Image (cartoon, rainbow, N blue to C red; front, side, top):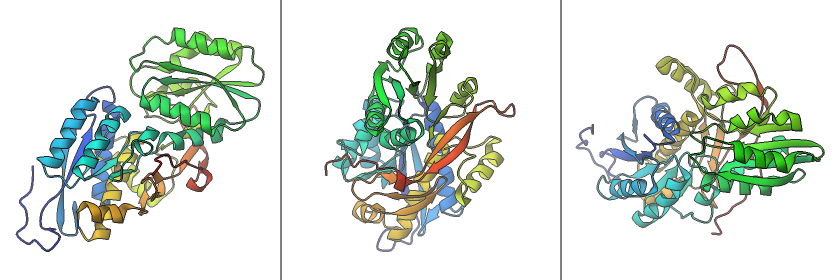
Length: 385
């Protein structure tokens, strides 16, 4: 419910509520990711405002919009949020396909869209426009970090990914990031796949008999369990499975793979900083569970918004926000981040892990091998601006 606007209204209109639309998958195949992001966004706003939910005298109001994971639905919701709800800026969405539909809407409205957590490179790449900022990591950051973990001479890798922007952009970036290992096959399957047998057989056929280390690198989001390919006895052919981080329920499958390596965007036990300590403690207190991957991302988006508004003195005019956000440095549960001026992509650490099985946890625990700092990742600028 909206609070009443204050009668005090200085030049920037700080007396008016600061209105943020959160367009996300409240339902649909990525519902779990979307709900975590929303929880994190609210916690981030709470943290950055010291619990007041106001910045520069303006009350923050968040309007939730369920895009259901559908690009057309998201597009209409965002257009209405900018035009009818008169929001100052928007956050979201969950799906890369929806994000690509939202980018031109933000440009047409001349309002900021802070992308969190959609990952496809093209969002801050060839489809980018100056109204787009992203706190979420992109495919290249995922790929380069995973290459740090897996890119060794004599290694042969085949990829298993979903056949849409997230999967294809992710594999493209991973392919480009590999310098020593050899990518021998790319397997793309529909997002709705539940039977992985045929795809797994093609992966086995491409890898079996090759010398050296053989790895299937899995890049998958949402429903379906691609780790079922392990049932086809990959070990018989000396084939390992590797993947990046994921949400905790998906990581229950990781328990089958002790020693599996990869790189994660976030796991609550890895970063050591005051923001993450606050998030973990607050989340346990409120939900009796640790914060998950997308909760951290949502919190980062909330913090970035408040820090930008502190810099503008509460002025939410788009030009002022753009100027404040370009190059903005801010603290997050992952440590310090900043928006790269060239494409507004947040540069951030990633975490090289090795899976350990601990009976105290329902999931395979990613133990930190080392933090991969932003300076170690040569993340390409892809927006051709």
